[in-house]
Length: 398
View 1 (tube, one colour):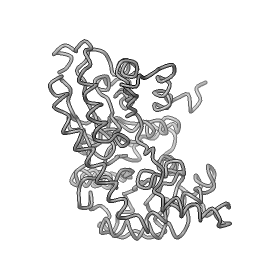
View 2 (view 1 turned 60 degrees about the horizontal axis):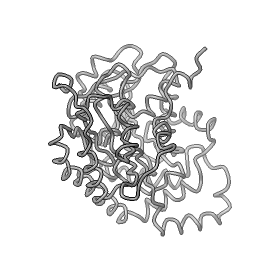
View 3 (view 1 turned 90 degrees about the vertical axis):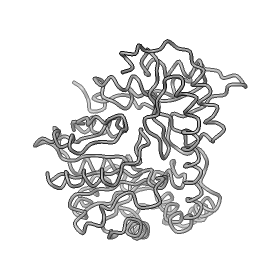
View 4 (view 1 turned 135 degrees about the vertical axis):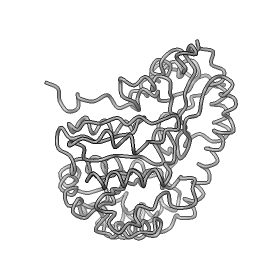
């Protein structure tokens, strides 16, 4: 018998951390960790002060509403409506214990065993893992050299068992920001086929575009088709407090509530109060965080000539990620542990983001640069450029 957990692979980030066991790094080549997209700095001091005050409030330590604190749901609905020039009501918002739980809850509410969900590849591995553990088939939608999915190709993958299409923009792992026209094409495809379009916007706050990334919420009937997911973890450095959100039809959230009540009863109260304080008070601070991430993104482009000359190719870059194609003969799955030992770099191979039968992942790496400043990015690229491993043949590279 194969259990639901045995039906999927080991957590990639935990697997990569095991490559560090027994490794030592000289003072002149300390470890550069670009394996995980989670801020390592604590929340800003004013937010920590607000959280300390919240700890003195008795209700912080009690169960709360399953779908989240009413004040947080209302604040997020107001800000979401203003940002996207649409209408979201508090009853269309649910707060979850992180964005991964938001995705899990939505899939539980939408899918039965044997159903299908279309995922562009390279995909976010935790989405694939949850589908595996739910008995739901992930249908791979291969993207092109620019990592932008094509709705017309997705249409050919729809079957009677398809329940949803799940997109991540800005993308994890590719970093690319999906154009508004791309998202609209997928929205129209989903609506025409009676499907849900799930758009995970965990990295929305670090999108380079000054305007809203899409206009889907301006459709008065958006809730018939669209489900948006969000995370407070990246915006306010609340990764350890697990606060995410779902924006969706109220009837769907009634089904989501059953899942959330069974799994966690309610999201953590302290994290929710921190998220609410952040939404109300940290707009300018978050704008500064965005500018810093955009500068690190620019540093990736500034340093790419070092790798261009060595046969590397930048496939996508944005928010927290750069996605690179390498020139070497061996698979990235083999090279990733070697990177730790020989170059002091911990990065995830593309094989962790692609189906086992897709050879493209063997030529790719994800670089999560949110915790590496401009100087560190230059050091990272200098180390990558110095690698002298055997190169793939021109045929293999093509």
